[in-house]
Amino acid sequence: MKKQILSLFIILTITLTGCSSVRKSISFGAVTGAISGMVLANGNAQKGQTGLAIGALVGGITSYFVHEGLEKRDASTRKETLFNLDRFGVFGQVKTSNSRSQSAPYSLSPAMVEQDYIETHVEDNGRLIEGHRIWTISQDSQWMPKKTNSHSKE
Image 1 (cartoon, helix red, strand yellow):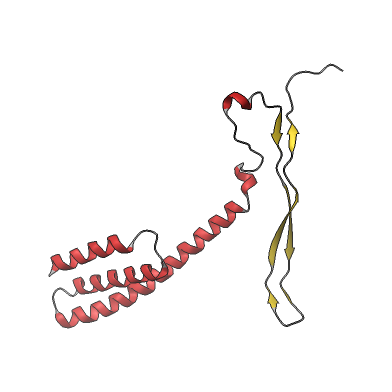
Image 2 (image 1 turned 90 degrees about the horizontal axis):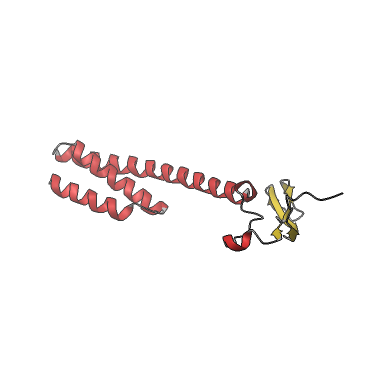
């Protein structure tokens, strides 16, 4: 019986982990909790059923909140990265081969981006508009002459 439970646990672990949806996370948590509850019952059938039910409930609820926390963290990381690309050196760089990069007299300037914040407000038709940001590209990237390090005569 314990070998069957262990086999079932391993199979479910392999199939339900990885990039999972909420449904898969809750299923995995419920199954893991149910198996844990049965194993803790030590062969007692009455306690096994109770342990299975309680374990499935606790495992499902716990996995839901863990999954939700991970999703919020990932969304925050994506947002922080996407809205601050200039901090990571993404804007204004042009990939060129090494042989040409030293002789190219021009480089690409970063685009000018303006940010506006719209406060939370109620429209005339009764719709509540939550506060949000709007980004506008006010000036596209342009080719700019590279500054040279050679000394100029005045």
